[in-house]
Image (cartoon, rainbow, N blue to C red; front, side):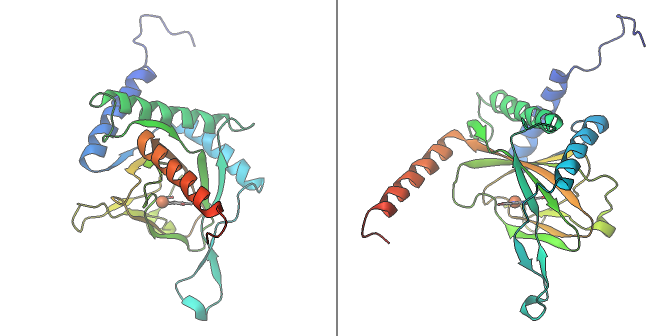
Length: 250
Ligand SMILES: Cc1cc(NC(=O)CCC(=O)O)nc(C)c1Br
Ligand SMILES: [Fe+3]
């Protein structure tokens, strides 16, 4: 319907981006972890979910690694971990995933500029991985406790967008538990709720695990690079490759 022009414009998305940036900067510098709910709004969130569901039903997810179940060797049944696929968001029928990626980029790049002369947590962020779309198929699939970037591969921030509607953690499991360094014995229990995005430092400060999920659980992950750490990792990789390619080396 026609809206009289004198009505206040809805908060434009730059104001919204600024608000989110301030939250991200504060929480990352205070806790190393930041949760933002209602990131895209229901309608756009559902559009992203639809694209992920159609990718999944098209069988484009690579089977996740096999993890032996808790019963150990006795019971040979193995449980698939997460199934994943990598997207840059420009593929056909992925425009909403592409819009999500652009919004996360806008937040990270703006937060990077806003905070003490262009550094977020003393990082200079200049790139990221493709988007990793992950699906935990349920039936107890989980992800063991790990650190995303234990050996300075260049990744400084992990961003995970969750797509799970009507998620009941008591029935469906799939809790992400982070054990932030410096929090003493406190842990961060993150429910993988629809339209929620989570940011955390990718290095050893944030070991985390996904507890067994009993309903299909979707997430889209982006990892952002720190320029210096990434360049150093690439130089190390090149050097190792040269050393290993010389005759007589292992
Ligand atoms: C493939 C891969 C997946 C993940 N995912 C999570 O940690 C789960 C987070 C969540 O879905 O809540 N992490 C690493 C370091 C690799 Br590699
Ligand atoms: Fe991880």
